[in-house]
Image (cartoon, rainbow, N blue to C red):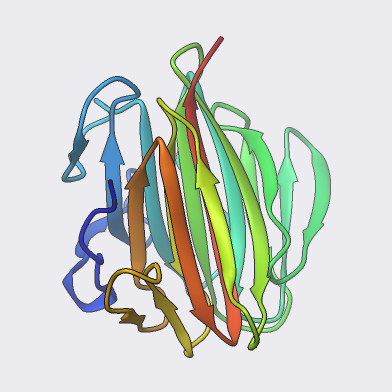
Length: 200
């Protein structure tokens, strides 16, 4: 069933693993267990967070972790992963290995990014950017054993089916949902759809 709305103003702030910046923890959990508050250590199967990147520099190393990073504010950045540069544009999910030597160069000032981490061999993640149409809304089905998290990237989105009162989402608020079932979005804006499943 759907969880409570996780509000941007209530996310816990904590320093990066390498001390180079700050991260707001959204949620973390196990693939065969309930949603849980994020832990400061690496004891998770999956974790979603939002980081503020004010200057270029190295990323923390997360051995055994797969990462998907999505720029949600700012003009762009270049990630050099094991010596290969990749231009990361706004709202374009980029996947890379947590143990790769990764360095960030900012193209036009500070950025904010959403990070999805999964423990290799335990969980996998798919991240998709979805436009919610003003007319009709969008329904997102969620399979048994799957965790769906929907983060609002703009104002103007509400979550709720026809049989329940819609709950308005502020920018970067997040709704966790565990299947089977479906989550209904109304409004006019853009969300990030994050699907977590057990690794096969």
